[in-house]
Length: 329
Image (cartoon, rainbow, N blue to C red; front, side):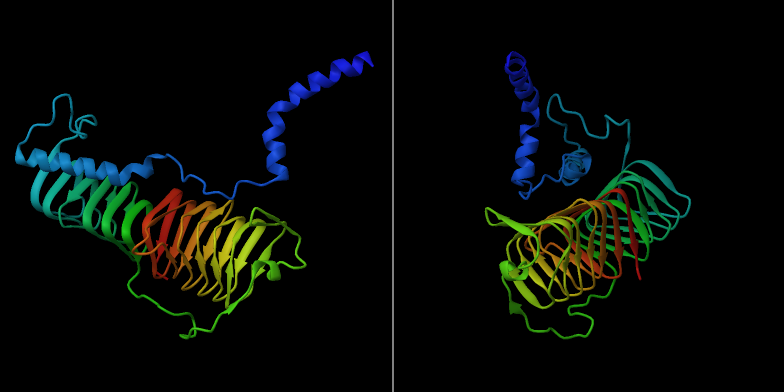
C-alpha cells in the first residue's frame, strides 16, 4: 500500500503534460480557423507599399523622417528611376527599378526589384529574383523566384512562381462560367445528419467528426462544419456551406465550398469548382479551371506545392512554400 501511495502521485505529476493531448483525442477542437503563418510572404503587400512610398519620396527629393533609412539602403542597393524601361535579352539589373509608367522585362532579362506606377510586363524567359509591384502585372512564361504584388496579376503560358498577390490573380486567357456540359443542374437540400447516417461519426458542438473517407452527393446543398479523418469529396455540383478540416479535400466539377479549408495533405479543385474561403494545404493545392476567393472577399491560399492548369482565378494571396507552377493546358 505504501508503494501504491508513492507511485500514484508521481504518475499523476508525470501525466500532467499529456492532459491537453488526451483532451484533444476525446474532444476535437482543431476545427477552428488555423493561422496561415507568420512567414515572410505574409507581409509582402505591406512591404511593397512601404517601398513604393519611399521610392516616391526619393523621386521628389524629399528626405526621410529622422532616424529612418530607405529600405533599399539596408540591402546595399541603388535605385534606377526612369519614366519607362524595357530590358532586352541578356540585360540584368541587381538594384531597384522604379518607373513612373511601366517596366518591361524581355525574354532572358533579369531583375531583382521592380516597381512601376502603371504596369509591369514579364515576357518569356524573364526572371524576377526579389519582388515587384504595379497596379497591373502581366506574366508570360516567366520564372518568378520572389513575390509579385498587384491589383490585377495575369499569368499566361507556363511559368513558375512562389508568391502572388492580387485581386484578382488570373491564370490563362479563357474563362468558363459553367460546367463541362454548359448547363446547371438543379440542387436538392440535404442535411449532413441524413448523409452521414450509417457512416461512423460524432457530433461535437455542431461539428461533424467523420472517421473515414466520405463523399457528398452531386447536386446537393449541405450546411455544417466537417472534420474528416480521411478524404472529403464534394461531388459534381455539390454546395457545402461551412468550413472543413480533413486529410485531403477534393472538389469535383462545379462544386462550391463556402467556407475555409484546412487539409493535412492535398486540396484538389476540378473544372469550374470554387472555394470562397481561406485555403491551407500541407501538400499539393491543384486548381484546374477553378476559383478561390471572390472579388468582394479576397482570401489567402497557401500550400507546400501549387499547380494551376488552364484558366483559373484567385482573389487574394497565392503562396507556394516549395514550388508553384502554371500550365496553360
